[in-house]
Length: 308
Image (cartoon, rainbow, N blue to C red; front, top):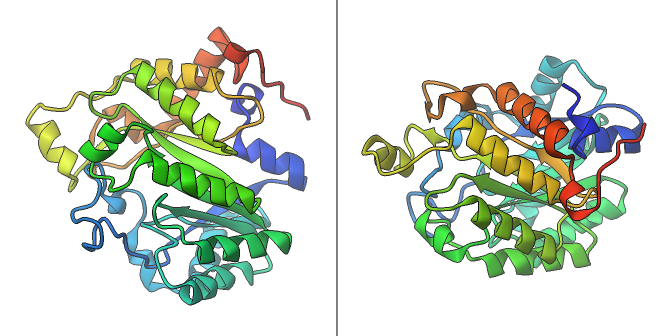
């Protein structure tokens, strides 16, 4: 599979700009989430079980120790991006954020930060901090978990924020020159392909630099798991996911960087669908779809063309 020939992938984008492969090292900063600690809600998002995404046992290690451990396991690159993924990685006092981020940036192997967070938890002080690192020459990406642009769905999945919260944060970030990567879930309950395409349009109109696509998967310990077991949630087949993801990518301008086109979880945490256990299966299927029906941007006359 050579996905970079049909999609403007994050890996190929980094290699073009840095002249070598740059990999992400996933870090756990021990952050919480206002949708779990009672600040704006409790129980978290209905699809959420963060333990299925990252091993929470690593949070007891220092940032420096996590970097060393992961870099040793990776053995694929000499330079990396520090990715604060778990929970809400801007949800702390700015002094705490500064200390955490700079523990990572002080490593000679780190070229920048990717900071995952919620659209409603990015104070101006955090944006100024990130903009400062960018002005020093570091690669900085603000990763916003939007999931959908439809407020009704956001309410139904207990996100605790609106699309306007997202839009306002994106405007502030882009005014400071900070790159934004937006996470979207395909297959949320009661959403159709048209709903997904409307979400893409609204996200593009707000201004975005990167996208991550995730199939909805049901994980043990989530609120959705109960509804799925009761037969109240339908899960997309691989073919259905590929059809929607392919159309979304074809309607995405060629300059937008795709950080991810699918995602996976491990059993026994993963309950459904089974095909989410192997993300290579879905990535290969999306790659085939794009080669057959058109590459990124082809549906809007902005066809992606990979250049060495």
